[in-house]
Length: 399
Image 1: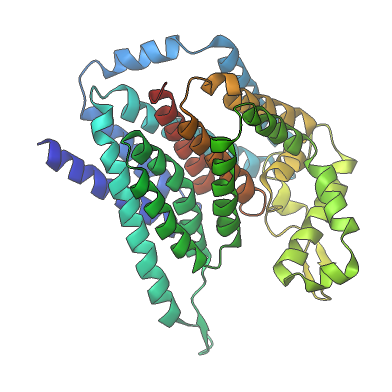
Image 2 (image 1 turned 180 degrees about the vertical axis):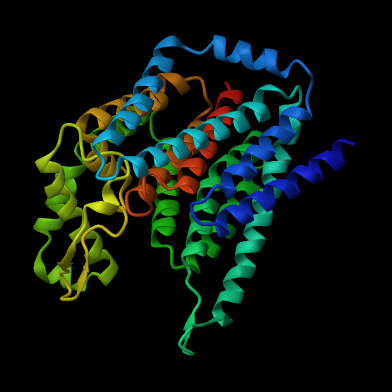
């Protein structure tokens, strides 16, 4: 019975992940996650609602107040969006996403009397994802899309880049599980397989994120414990100074260096420069939740072509927070994030566990700094789910 239930969960996880990757920002991923959470809850004891009540009752009041302030500011900022009804729709979607992800993690962690027995389900789902992506890349090399006008073009790779980003995010909690079981060689083998797979993709953000994550792991693993405090301060300073840093990056790169950059990189710099100018005009409360797609215009790019100044979003999560939520929203989110990452929270974790924890967050910072919108449903859900599960695994591995 135990083996059959585990097999069903592996299949559900793989099915949910596959449809999630292939779906645009629709309600399909949310419905799948909600279904998964509901099935998880129904498969446990009848006192599940009592356990949920006790969990909510024991939540730290200050943390709950901070979460409420962030939620309220997201909703309030919708009022000065160019189209408030669109902003409110996005706010509702984000709220549902957060609730679904929280319920999923809670049902997995707190309603099971044998949570550690289900860790292999995550490993199984992860290995299935690797196989699906590997086959997808092979198929993609030979796939041709027939266009309406009779011409042909290669299949768009964006969905596979999303899959690569998810793969890199999930690597760290899976490695943590293997580390807990003292399967260190298997963990490094898994890293090598993922690295080889990611190297075959067009996702530069995932490649850099994986590299920076691995470097952070080595630094935290072999340097004194105090190094984590430097990382913690660095995260806060990076978020708070993002507009200034990106403005300087876009304006002080030498011309000869700029000309050597790929067109996509030059376009990113033009986007960031344009967004920092908008932020300077309204730095305190921003332009409203999800307003980025309505603030752009056509501009001359550094390589001489015409392009959008903001193609849907700034392609930098912290910069989008500044643009849409202003300093008030950024201060609230940064406070919550720094509380979550404070070294005091994880001081009793083993050195290797702590290194993998910070490697995960280094990877997150890199990917969110060059790709994806801050409010894309699939991405927000992935960050909530992987960070919560990683934290759960770290807290279970105390010295």
